[in-house]
Length: 347
Image (cartoon, rainbow, N blue to C red):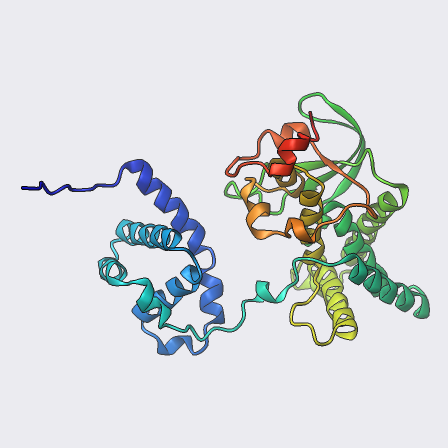
Protein backbone atom coordinates (compact mmCIF):
# COMPACT_ATOMS: atom_id res chain seq x y z
CA UNK A 1 0.00 0.00 0.00
CA UNK A 2 1.33 3.35 -1.03
CA UNK A 3 1.40 6.08 1.60
CA UNK A 4 -0.09 9.46 0.75
CA UNK A 5 2.51 12.23 0.76
CA UNK A 6 1.39 15.69 1.85
CA UNK A 7 3.39 18.40 0.17
CA UNK A 8 3.69 21.68 2.04
CA UNK A 9 5.36 24.91 0.99
CA UNK A 10 8.34 26.15 2.99
CA UNK A 11 8.44 29.77 4.17
CA UNK A 12 11.20 30.36 1.65
CA UNK A 13 8.99 29.10 -1.19
CA UNK A 14 6.08 31.25 -0.02
CA UNK A 15 8.31 34.34 0.06
CA UNK A 16 9.51 33.52 -3.42
CA UNK A 17 5.92 33.33 -4.65
CA UNK A 18 5.06 36.61 -2.92
CA UNK A 19 7.92 38.39 -4.64
CA UNK A 20 6.87 36.96 -8.00
CA UNK A 21 3.25 38.01 -7.38
CA UNK A 22 4.34 41.53 -6.44
CA UNK A 23 6.19 41.83 -9.71
CA UNK A 24 3.20 40.48 -11.67
CA UNK A 25 0.78 42.89 -10.00
CA UNK A 26 2.73 45.90 -11.32
CA UNK A 27 0.97 45.72 -14.69
CA UNK A 28 -2.53 45.13 -13.27
CA UNK A 29 -3.39 48.84 -13.33
CA UNK A 30 -2.22 49.25 -16.93
CA UNK A 31 -4.25 46.21 -17.93
CA UNK A 32 -7.38 47.57 -16.26
CA UNK A 33 -6.93 51.00 -17.86
CA UNK A 34 -6.60 49.45 -21.31
CA UNK A 35 -9.48 46.96 -20.98
CA UNK A 36 -12.43 47.86 -23.20
CA UNK A 37 -15.87 48.02 -21.53
CA UNK A 38 -14.31 47.05 -18.21
CA UNK A 39 -17.52 47.72 -16.24
CA UNK A 40 -19.41 44.86 -17.88
CA UNK A 41 -17.10 42.15 -16.47
CA UNK A 42 -17.37 40.50 -13.06
CA UNK A 43 -14.36 40.35 -10.76
CA UNK A 44 -13.88 36.68 -11.58
CA UNK A 45 -13.88 37.37 -15.32
CA UNK A 46 -11.53 40.32 -14.91
CA UNK A 47 -9.01 38.31 -12.86
CA UNK A 48 -9.00 35.45 -15.38
CA UNK A 49 -8.55 37.84 -18.31
CA UNK A 50 -5.65 39.54 -16.55
CA UNK A 51 -4.07 36.20 -15.66
CA UNK A 52 -4.45 35.12 -19.28
CA UNK A 53 -2.74 38.37 -20.32
CA UNK A 54 0.36 37.90 -18.15
CA UNK A 55 0.67 34.14 -18.76
CA UNK A 56 0.05 34.21 -22.51
CA UNK A 57 2.88 32.66 -24.51
CA UNK A 58 4.78 31.50 -21.42
CA UNK A 59 6.15 27.97 -20.99
CA UNK A 60 4.36 25.34 -18.90
CA UNK A 61 6.89 25.81 -16.12
CA UNK A 62 6.47 29.59 -16.07
CA UNK A 63 2.69 29.22 -16.18
CA UNK A 64 2.80 26.99 -13.09
CA UNK A 65 5.02 29.51 -11.27
CA UNK A 66 2.69 32.40 -12.14
CA UNK A 67 -0.31 30.39 -11.02
CA UNK A 68 1.31 29.37 -7.71
CA UNK A 69 2.46 32.95 -7.08
CA UNK A 70 -0.99 34.39 -7.69
CA UNK A 71 -2.64 31.71 -5.52
CA UNK A 72 -0.24 32.64 -2.70
CA UNK A 73 -1.20 36.29 -3.23
CA UNK A 74 -4.88 35.31 -2.84
CA UNK A 75 -4.18 33.13 0.22
CA UNK A 76 -2.46 36.03 1.99
CA UNK A 77 -5.54 38.21 1.38
CA UNK A 78 -8.20 35.63 2.17
CA UNK A 79 -9.54 35.62 -1.40
CA UNK A 80 -10.88 32.06 -1.17
CA UNK A 81 -13.24 32.32 -4.16
CA UNK A 82 -10.37 33.29 -6.46
CA UNK A 83 -8.17 30.51 -5.09
CA UNK A 84 -10.75 27.89 -6.08
CA UNK A 85 -11.14 29.41 -9.53
CA UNK A 86 -7.38 29.53 -10.14
CA UNK A 87 -6.77 25.98 -8.93
CA UNK A 88 -9.32 24.69 -11.43
CA UNK A 89 -8.06 26.88 -14.29
CA UNK A 90 -5.92 25.18 -16.93
CA UNK A 91 -3.84 26.60 -19.76
CA UNK A 92 -6.37 25.23 -22.23
CA UNK A 93 -9.19 27.15 -20.57
CA UNK A 94 -7.21 30.37 -20.55
CA UNK A 95 -6.38 29.98 -24.23
CA UNK A 96 -10.08 30.36 -25.01
CA UNK A 97 -10.20 33.79 -23.35
CA UNK A 98 -9.50 36.84 -25.51
CA UNK A 99 -9.16 39.99 -23.39
CA UNK A 100 -10.56 42.95 -25.40
CA UNK A 101 -7.72 45.32 -24.55
CA UNK A 102 -6.23 48.30 -26.30
CA UNK A 103 -2.56 48.05 -27.06
CA UNK A 104 -0.64 49.03 -23.93
CA UNK A 105 0.99 52.44 -24.08
CA UNK A 106 4.48 51.05 -23.46
CA UNK A 107 4.07 48.66 -26.40
CA UNK A 108 3.50 51.61 -28.71
CA UNK A 109 6.85 53.15 -27.82
CA UNK A 110 10.03 52.09 -29.59
CA UNK A 111 12.81 50.61 -27.46
CA UNK A 112 15.49 51.31 -30.04
CA UNK A 113 16.56 53.83 -32.65
CA UNK A 114 18.93 52.89 -35.44
CA UNK A 115 21.92 55.08 -36.33
CA UNK A 116 20.23 55.84 -39.66
CA UNK A 117 16.99 56.96 -37.98
CA UNK A 118 18.84 59.05 -35.43
CA UNK A 119 20.75 60.81 -38.21
CA UNK A 120 17.45 61.44 -39.99
CA UNK A 121 15.90 62.84 -36.80
CA UNK A 122 18.94 65.05 -36.16
CA UNK A 123 18.76 66.38 -39.70
CA UNK A 124 15.04 67.13 -39.31
CA UNK A 125 15.53 69.16 -36.13
CA UNK A 126 18.67 70.98 -37.28
CA UNK A 127 16.93 72.11 -40.47
CA UNK A 128 13.90 73.20 -38.46
CA UNK A 129 16.06 75.10 -35.97
CA UNK A 130 17.89 76.88 -38.78
CA UNK A 131 14.73 77.78 -40.69
CA UNK A 132 13.01 79.09 -37.57
CA UNK A 133 15.99 81.07 -36.31
CA UNK A 134 16.85 78.85 -33.35
CA UNK A 135 13.27 78.33 -32.16
CA UNK A 136 13.58 77.44 -28.49
CA UNK A 137 11.14 74.50 -28.58
CA UNK A 138 13.09 72.67 -31.28
CA UNK A 139 16.44 73.50 -29.66
CA UNK A 140 15.31 72.16 -26.28
CA UNK A 141 13.99 68.94 -27.81
CA UNK A 142 17.06 68.25 -29.93
CA UNK A 143 19.43 68.91 -27.03
CA UNK A 144 17.40 66.82 -24.55
CA UNK A 145 17.15 63.65 -26.64
CA UNK A 146 20.79 64.00 -27.71
CA UNK A 147 21.96 64.31 -24.09
CA UNK A 148 19.76 61.36 -23.05
CA UNK A 149 21.33 59.26 -25.79
CA UNK A 150 24.77 60.01 -24.29
CA UNK A 151 24.12 59.30 -20.59
CA UNK A 152 20.79 57.41 -20.49
CA UNK A 153 18.93 59.48 -17.90
CA UNK A 154 15.18 59.19 -17.37
CA UNK A 155 13.60 62.35 -18.84
CA UNK A 156 12.40 63.42 -15.38
CA UNK A 157 15.92 63.11 -13.93
CA UNK A 158 17.34 65.97 -15.98
CA UNK A 159 15.72 68.48 -13.65
CA UNK A 160 18.16 67.71 -10.82
CA UNK A 161 21.20 66.69 -12.87
CA UNK A 162 24.43 68.62 -12.33
CA UNK A 163 28.01 68.34 -13.51
CA UNK A 164 30.63 68.40 -10.78
CA UNK A 165 34.36 68.88 -11.31
CA UNK A 166 36.85 67.21 -8.96
CA UNK A 167 34.02 65.33 -7.30
CA UNK A 168 34.86 63.66 -3.98
CA UNK A 169 32.86 60.45 -3.52
CA UNK A 170 31.84 58.88 -0.19
CA UNK A 171 34.74 56.43 -0.34
CA UNK A 172 37.20 59.31 -0.78
CA UNK A 173 37.75 58.76 -4.51
CA UNK A 174 38.22 61.96 -6.49
CA UNK A 175 36.94 62.06 -10.09
CA UNK A 176 37.76 64.87 -12.48
CA UNK A 177 34.28 65.12 -14.01
CA UNK A 178 31.01 63.57 -12.83
CA UNK A 179 27.32 63.87 -13.66
CA UNK A 180 25.38 63.70 -10.39
CA UNK A 181 21.79 62.54 -10.78
CA UNK A 182 19.00 62.14 -8.26
CA UNK A 183 17.44 58.75 -8.98
CA UNK A 184 13.80 59.22 -9.99
CA UNK A 185 12.71 55.99 -8.28
CA UNK A 186 14.56 56.35 -4.98
CA UNK A 187 11.50 55.54 -2.85
CA UNK A 188 10.59 52.09 -1.50
CA UNK A 189 14.02 50.68 -2.39
CA UNK A 190 13.32 50.99 -6.13
CA UNK A 191 16.64 52.66 -6.97
CA UNK A 192 20.31 52.11 -6.24
CA UNK A 193 20.54 54.87 -3.64
CA UNK A 194 19.24 58.43 -3.62
CA UNK A 195 21.84 59.62 -6.13
CA UNK A 196 24.01 58.08 -8.79
CA UNK A 197 27.23 59.41 -10.28
CA UNK A 198 28.27 58.93 -13.89
CA UNK A 199 31.97 59.24 -14.67
CA UNK A 200 32.46 61.64 -17.59
CA UNK A 201 36.26 61.53 -17.65
CA UNK A 202 36.32 59.97 -21.15
CA UNK A 203 33.58 62.12 -22.67
CA UNK A 204 34.10 64.00 -25.93
CA UNK A 205 34.03 67.77 -25.89
CA UNK A 206 30.92 68.14 -28.08
CA UNK A 207 28.98 65.61 -26.02
CA UNK A 208 29.95 67.37 -22.78
CA UNK A 209 28.74 70.67 -24.24
CA UNK A 210 25.46 69.02 -25.18
CA UNK A 211 24.89 67.78 -21.62
CA UNK A 212 25.82 71.17 -20.16
CA UNK A 213 23.52 72.96 -22.58
CA UNK A 214 20.59 70.70 -21.70
CA UNK A 215 21.05 71.34 -17.99
CA UNK A 216 21.40 75.09 -18.64
CA UNK A 217 18.23 75.29 -20.77
CA UNK A 218 16.22 73.49 -18.10
CA UNK A 219 17.55 75.68 -15.28
CA UNK A 220 16.82 78.83 -17.28
CA UNK A 221 13.24 77.69 -17.86
CA UNK A 222 12.70 76.87 -14.18
CA UNK A 223 14.23 80.16 -13.11
CA UNK A 224 12.12 82.18 -15.55
CA UNK A 225 8.96 80.36 -14.48
CA UNK A 226 9.66 81.19 -10.86
CA UNK A 227 10.59 84.83 -11.46
CA UNK A 228 7.77 85.60 -13.86
CA UNK A 229 5.10 83.79 -11.87
CA UNK A 230 3.73 81.92 -14.88
CA UNK A 231 0.29 80.25 -14.77
CA UNK A 232 1.76 76.83 -14.15
CA UNK A 233 3.40 78.10 -10.96
CA UNK A 234 0.17 79.82 -9.82
CA UNK A 235 -1.71 76.55 -10.30
CA UNK A 236 0.93 74.70 -8.25
CA UNK A 237 2.07 72.78 -11.30
CA UNK A 238 5.65 71.70 -11.77
CA UNK A 239 7.23 73.98 -14.43
CA UNK A 240 9.50 71.12 -15.45
CA UNK A 241 6.47 69.03 -16.42
CA UNK A 242 5.54 71.57 -19.10
CA UNK A 243 9.15 71.64 -20.33
CA UNK A 244 9.26 67.84 -20.52
CA UNK A 245 5.86 67.69 -22.24
CA UNK A 246 6.78 70.30 -24.86
CA UNK A 247 9.89 68.26 -25.78
CA UNK A 248 7.84 65.06 -25.94
CA UNK A 249 5.25 66.76 -28.14
CA UNK A 250 7.92 68.07 -30.52
CA UNK A 251 9.45 64.61 -30.79
CA UNK A 252 6.02 63.07 -31.47
CA UNK A 253 5.40 65.66 -34.19
CA UNK A 254 8.77 64.90 -35.81
CA UNK A 255 8.06 61.17 -35.72
CA UNK A 256 4.72 61.62 -37.51
CA UNK A 257 6.38 63.72 -40.19
CA UNK A 258 9.28 61.34 -40.76
CA UNK A 259 7.63 57.94 -40.24
CA UNK A 260 3.83 58.36 -40.55
CA UNK A 261 3.13 54.64 -41.06
CA UNK A 262 5.13 53.23 -38.17
CA UNK A 263 3.16 51.60 -35.37
CA UNK A 264 5.75 52.29 -32.65
CA UNK A 265 6.85 55.84 -31.97
CA UNK A 266 10.16 57.33 -30.90
CA UNK A 267 9.96 59.05 -27.52
CA UNK A 268 12.48 60.55 -25.10
CA UNK A 269 12.54 57.19 -23.32
CA UNK A 270 13.60 55.51 -26.58
CA UNK A 271 17.05 57.07 -26.16
CA UNK A 272 17.37 55.63 -22.63
CA UNK A 273 16.51 52.21 -24.08
CA UNK A 274 19.10 52.69 -26.82
CA UNK A 275 21.67 53.69 -24.21
CA UNK A 276 21.09 50.36 -22.42
CA UNK A 277 21.29 48.44 -25.71
CA UNK A 278 24.59 50.13 -26.61
CA UNK A 279 26.24 49.26 -23.31
CA UNK A 280 25.03 45.66 -23.51
CA UNK A 281 26.54 45.48 -26.99
CA UNK A 282 29.84 46.95 -25.77
CA UNK A 283 30.16 44.22 -23.14
CA UNK A 284 29.38 46.06 -19.93
CA UNK A 285 28.16 43.74 -17.19
CA UNK A 286 24.56 43.87 -16.01
CA UNK A 287 25.52 45.40 -12.66
CA UNK A 288 27.51 48.12 -14.40
CA UNK A 289 24.56 48.97 -16.64
CA UNK A 290 22.24 48.95 -13.60
CA UNK A 291 24.54 51.40 -11.80
CA UNK A 292 24.64 53.68 -14.84
CA UNK A 293 20.85 53.68 -15.11
CA UNK A 294 20.01 53.93 -11.42
CA UNK A 295 18.38 50.50 -11.12
CA UNK A 296 18.21 48.71 -7.78
CA UNK A 297 18.98 45.33 -9.38
CA UNK A 298 20.70 44.00 -12.48
CA UNK A 299 17.42 42.44 -13.67
CA UNK A 300 15.58 45.60 -14.76
CA UNK A 301 17.71 46.60 -17.75
CA UNK A 302 18.18 42.96 -18.72
CA UNK A 303 14.45 42.23 -18.86
CA UNK A 304 12.79 45.52 -19.78
CA UNK A 305 15.25 47.67 -21.73
CA UNK A 306 16.79 47.73 -25.21
CA UNK A 307 18.29 44.48 -26.45
CA UNK A 308 21.95 43.82 -27.14
CA UNK A 309 21.09 43.11 -30.79
CA UNK A 310 19.89 46.72 -31.17
CA UNK A 311 23.11 48.12 -29.70
CA UNK A 312 26.17 49.57 -31.38
CA UNK A 313 29.43 51.29 -30.52
CA UNK A 314 31.05 54.37 -31.94
CA UNK A 315 29.51 57.74 -32.70
CA UNK A 316 29.02 58.60 -29.03
CA UNK A 317 31.09 59.09 -25.90
CA UNK A 318 31.60 56.27 -23.44
CA UNK A 319 30.68 57.00 -19.82
CA UNK A 320 31.30 54.76 -16.82
CA UNK A 321 29.63 53.87 -13.52
CA UNK A 322 31.21 54.42 -10.14
CA UNK A 323 32.78 51.30 -8.64
CA UNK A 324 31.17 51.76 -5.21
CA UNK A 325 27.71 52.08 -6.80
CA UNK A 326 28.23 48.98 -8.93
CA UNK A 327 28.92 47.02 -5.73
CA UNK A 328 25.55 48.00 -4.21
CA UNK A 329 23.45 46.74 -7.13
CA UNK A 330 21.43 43.66 -6.22
CA UNK A 331 22.44 40.70 -8.35
CA UNK A 332 19.57 38.60 -9.69
CA UNK A 333 21.01 37.36 -12.97
CA UNK A 334 24.26 35.85 -14.22
CA UNK A 335 26.58 38.26 -16.08
CA UNK A 336 26.41 38.48 -19.85
CA UNK A 337 28.57 35.71 -21.36
CA UNK A 338 30.56 38.20 -23.41
CA UNK A 339 31.10 40.39 -20.36
CA UNK A 340 32.61 37.41 -18.52
CA UNK A 341 35.12 36.90 -21.29
CA UNK A 342 36.17 40.52 -21.45
CA UNK A 343 35.98 41.14 -17.73
CA UNK A 344 34.52 44.08 -15.88
CA UNK A 345 35.31 47.59 -17.01
CA UNK A 346 36.17 48.44 -13.42
CA UNK A 347 38.85 45.81 -12.82
